[in-house]
Image (cartoon, rainbow, N blue to C red; front, side, top):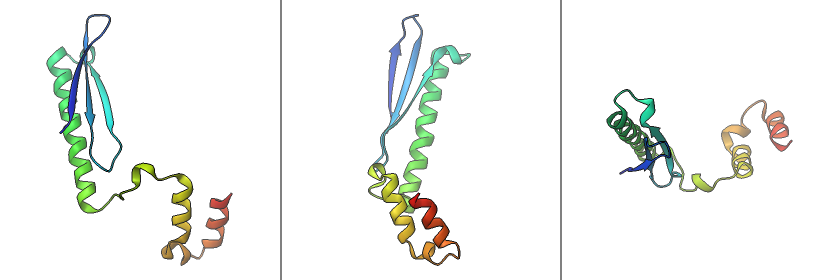
Length: 105
C-alpha cells in the first residue's frame, strides 16, 4: 500500500507526495502539485493515487515473475559486470573476449 502525504506550500497551494515501498525494491516517490491540474486538489491527489497504484502493480508483477533478485537494491556495477562475464551464456558468445576486454576497461 502506498503512502500519500499532503504538503502545504509557501504560496498556499498544496502538493501530494506518493511513496511506494515494495521489497526488495528501493522506495520510490513522486510529488504532484495541484497547480498542474485543472481540478486542483482532487486532480493532484487522484493522480498521486493512480501513479502509486500502477507502480505497485508493476513491482508486484515483477516480484512474482521472479524478475528481481533479493540483492537488487544493493548490487554494484562491479558485481553486475563480474556476474555477466561469469555467465555461461555470455562465455558461449563468439565475441566473449571482446566483451570481457570492454567490461574490464
